[in-house]
Image (cartoon, rainbow, N blue to C red; front, side, top):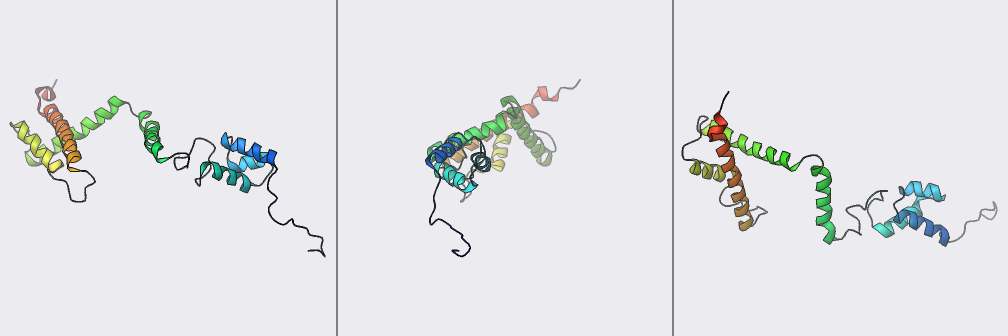
Length: 181
């Protein structure tokens, strides 16, 4: 190296304090991706990404929003992030009324298909026992051994399904459902 006059300083010289402060400010503001910040500051991407990972944790550095896996998002914020994600996915796409209509149409189709298979397309006169039968077929009294639900949660879900099935049976078997013009 001496012969060819190649000189490499020993150790990492690091970034000047002013340059590091500018990069840190841009990373905290999430101004751009790490590579773009490096281009603007005329440094390699490695120190920019090192600063970003030191601030936001090991996840990928993105230019918008705090990643859900970031260290900034503690376990206490996981539920809030989950709800925020669901709002962005579902609430923009479907209204609450549309979701309810879809849910009721699923249970109505279940009742119609069950009646078609087991009762030749007619709803029995004893609707209460029919709803109990449907509920026990759809959700048995006791959950499987490896079920993630507790007995109390299973019972509540079963009551909720029974209420939806009751509404669907009334919709299918009610006189207003049989009107024709």
